Image (cartoon, rainbow, N blue to C red; front, side, top):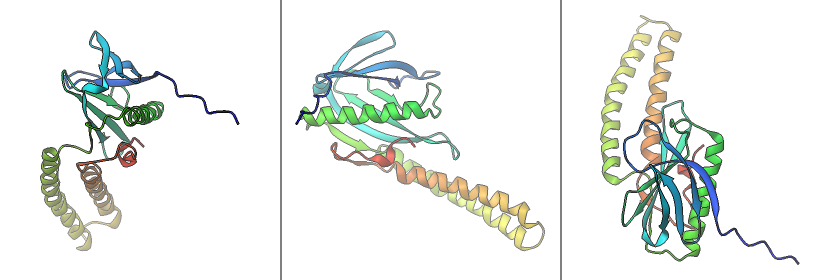
Length: 206
């Protein structure tokens, strides 16, 4: 019986990245994963950032709008220097199915190497930070009151006979769809932790 081939020492992925600094569009670079860490070039600087300096990995779902595909973001925080943000989207933040596939492969490879290397001190988080999530819940409740009131007004107009069915159906469906998108954003990005051996697939790009 032939033995399975050994995994490659290094793998390379072309993705869009950032470091938290404001920029017009995301930077494209080649990320190289090895047993020691991750190498890439950004803003004219390049080099290896070792896994021994990696303190946390955060996976987050990102959505550009009610009709946009879900994208994903991985935030890698190190004990020194700026964090590294790896995106599944194009440089302009829009969906790119080929990049989605590359992003998922990068995330799977990264976690496989971290687990194999015994980096147990790294915090693995999912969703947005708790403070931002609480703020998002408050915004959602305010939006529910505003748009709920607008929906009831539209419904009242329809039931009173002052407008036809098709005249009120469109606004009602639109308000309902917008409300569902906000709720999905709140629940999908709920803060928490995860086991690096079992990735949170619900925050991956679709």
